[in-house]
Figure 1 (cartoon, rainbow over the protein chains, first blue to last red):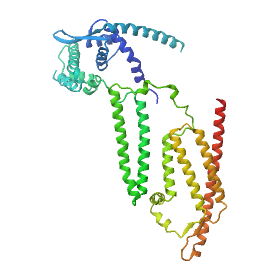
Figure 2 (figure 1 turned 120 degrees about the vertical axis):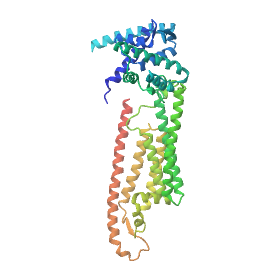
Figure 3 (figure 1 turned 60 degrees about the vertical axis):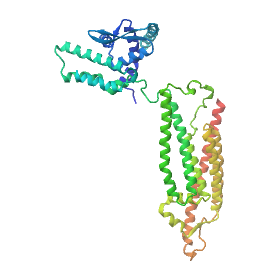
Figure 4 (figure 1 turned 90 degrees about the horizontal axis):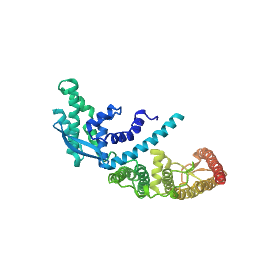
Length: 109
Length: 331
């Protein structure tokens, strides 16, 4: 049975989304504005993926969050923890290595 | 925003308890923000359908809540291969035990068919019970983050040898074992088994067979022990094969031996006449003599065919053994 494009695309995006979220949270965001920022930069992500991802990253100690009042409403703001910053640096290095390799492979292909 | 509150409530009820309020509050805020943005864009408050459309796009409450759950599957990809392996082994053992038990009890019962049919239900019960128990054990291992010790503590040296095409699956061996046991019980005259097999083969017609005016001549007493010896050798081979399915050359060697015995016995039987005689005590035996001669001719034809099969199997197995010896020599 041939694999369908959608499932392979999701597989390809999964790791990239984590990296993009960590990179964006170098500056503080709450979920809704974070999603909007990602979408504006061309990275579509639905809420059902983003919010559980934020929770998981927080459980892993890579993010910290706090509730704060903004426009008379409580919002949960996320930003990178110290471990998160270290992890982001490592992931960015890894991403660059993979990207360079892929560029070479795709050029040869 | 009444719809929004109902939606958040529906999701909240399904969320993991420790962070339920926190997550529900965040979902509520996200949806409110999205609705407010939409209102700004339209320049008016949203109507009920527009609110519903945003909620629908966010996802079914059960699906949304499930994404926050720790466990997304009952048995994950790490444990799944071990789950199927364990299930297969345990099911084979359970089925073999149940079948042997059923045949043993059936053999000592007056109502063989009834006894065996009575085992049919419990057999399925056992199968479902085993599947359930093993699934629960693996689900618990998955849930509590447990990993089978062998996942980490495996040794490449303990892996089985490379499987080749002559490797007989354990399931096939188990089926063969049951068949051979039934055959021996039938041939040695365990009456209920003989009745059952006869009934399975001939159905109600068996009564005509048992009341026949014909009987087999002395050759039958040569064939029966030969078949029992072959079946007993096959049973021993099956038991060994269950433990060592990779012993292909051993099994091929045994097949050459048993088929050679059968071939010799069949060749001998082809020289023995007649095969069917009129039974003792039958009134006016001369009336049945021509029919007995015709039946003897039929049995002769069957024996000729029966002699060809073991001869063919001896040749193919010898070739197989030679080929595997060459492969071993090349390696």
